[in-house]
Length: 295
Ligand code: SF4
Image 1 (spheres, rainbow, N blue to C red):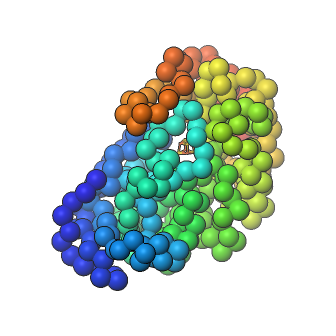
Image 2 (cartoon, rainbow, N blue to C red):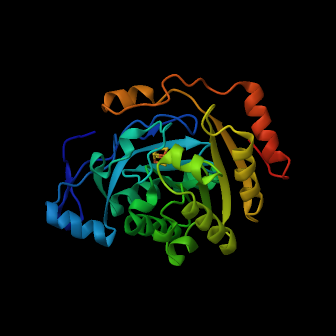
């Protein structure tokens, strides 16, 4: 998404006037772009230095949403770049960091500041999603710190795979972790994401030990993640985390299919149907059986 530069930001980088946010629907929505957000045209080497310092990040898009991505009305930012390759990813265009647009942390924080009254009235705040936010830990740390200085509630939406990138200082600035647990059996996790399960388990335990609230997200895909023993493994793990206040079972859908094809990527789930209401009910009950609050 691009617009015409109109003002000059910090470091002499041309930036673009902010406009109205893109608004979205459910969690598994397709994101809509960086419309209205400032971008930077800093020189390449300067960009790398700024990125290392956390001053500059790679942004896919952003939205203003209500009742998803955390409590209240939230500004959700989707950062570019992800180490996982989930077969059901509905935003495969967020997988590569180079597909994002450079955005100054200060510019994003200026935008967040404008929404402080909205966050106050609705009990909302900032959610940093992706892609994978922890691909850009310095940028995320700066956003979180800036948001906390504004008194804004903060959340990150993460697979936990890069949990080692989240410092204790960052964790202290996070009010809510939306932890995507994509499977409970290592082989199924690898088949689903291409990566190992263990880092996610380790991160969730660390977050719980810190006392930080967790919402769990589990995408239910017939023939991939729906085996009773896989769901049991996820549910047993989740029930062991003392700070989990909510579990969201998200039925698979085909909304991302066109994006895969548009990017020339092989989409393996083209013939997979959404789960039946009975299957969704069975899986939700598996979580409820452990005393968990399920949506
Ligand atoms: S973690 Fe999220 S962004 Fe990354 S591949 Fe999986 S679904 Fe897509």
